[in-house]
Length: 201
Picture 1: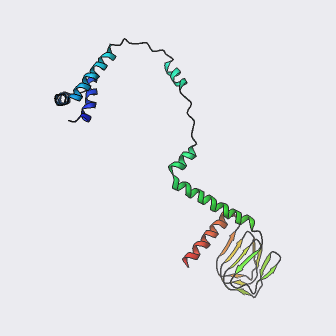
Picture 2: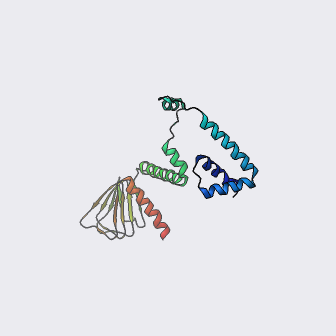
Picture 3: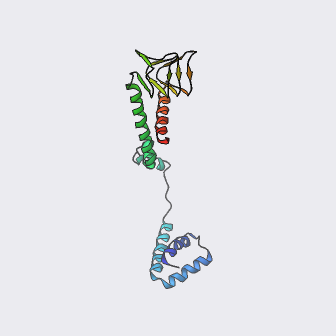
């Protein structure tokens, strides 16, 4: 047994909680270690002195008085604690908020008509209306933003209308998908899908 192991056994001995074999080991250690023996005698004297003190009466309101005297603990912001505990998640949240804010700004700032496609020679633009005339074909995708799209002819690719209206005549033939994006979230997902498609090609 070393001195570190002996110290808690001394306290257990004084409290009467030490078993007979442990008490025997402790006494053997005292024979070999004068420092522990001296410390144990001091602890015995202190314990005897405390036990000899007369019992004192405790006022009923002592707990309340002690608690009332303690300084008021300031409450910390729970979100600030969360940020400190989860720095990586906090950075991700801030990044997503900034990205969403920039997409919102782009959504709101660009109210001008935009027409995009690989084959626009047969497309007619009148004010904010984009027309694919009957008997004419637009090869590839056709994207119209912030305008009205009137399709009377054919579109061989996808048809995408962002923040606008779409009118298909009975003579119209669309060979790809028709996507209508009217809400910010829909436009957000459209932009992300477009971005990801560029990497997959």
